[in-house]
Length: 397
Image 1 (cartoon, rainbow, N blue to C red):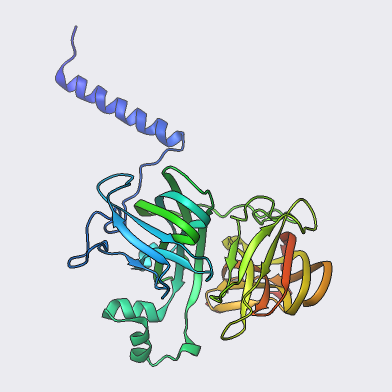
Image 2 (cartoon, rainbow, N blue to C red):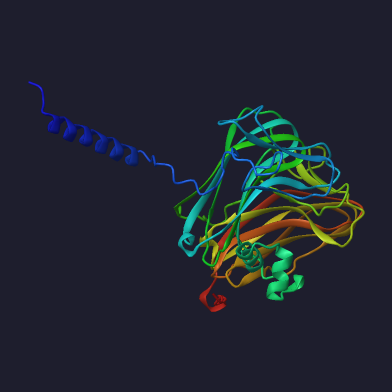
């Protein structure tokens, strides 16, 4: 006997409800609303021959980088964008970017940025990056439709007094020379007082990377990852693979570079070597670093360590830790420095993380530009335990 239309409707709804419950139980979730305008680069900027609406490019001032919006190779739709570089003399990060104001409703949630990329002849590293800041000048510039320099004049803030404060950062590097379309994703927690967000996708090195179908979604915050004691929390601590777990932070001086070296190492079969950059305007910090984003680091004592080797280095190599907090940047007290010719030496620095910290940066660095080389290997970042209550810094909100 056939069922009535009402019975069939109820049965269908029951099946859909059961399917939804099964999906939730299996960990599936519907995609959040895409918060980016023109995420597929389909809309062009009126009056411009190739620029997509709503996006910007980095400004390097060199003629060896090329940005484009084309239809010859796309992931979906009719257009994709690309960045291509034919020179690595200057260690610059060429990128497509979008800047967004963050409302208070985003605080305490995660933002997830994803983009599809395709690498063509890359000798370097492509990347996807999301950054969160409390940035009064950029916020004022966006609200008034002016440049950041003009916002400095509006607020009468000098460059040395810039109140910029980083509260979230994650970058996904990919160094494959050739790839088909691959989805890249990065995720950060939006800390209280965050007001500006940057999403970027780009290239450091030479070759070409094509990007399409970008997405930014707001989602419930994931719980912080566990922080087991005396456990190394660094990615690729011995530089045994391709170094994609590390930020290479190099001032824009000609010839400075950081590379994985398989001829000089402390353990395993590789280390990271930084050299070059003998000409520059001022001394700046150069090296490799990682950001450990975990709000449960607050109130913990942590240690950063690693082996250092210097070769004719006419400068100072050292380890450094910085904690990004709601009241400003805190740094670890200075540790040892290394220069000229130093064989492999274990260096370490410890820090009590303030109670309002949201991320800690671990640096293996030296002051550039100077002649010589510095190597780092067998690195570690570990939690030693809770800071005793009597020693805790009651951080200012």
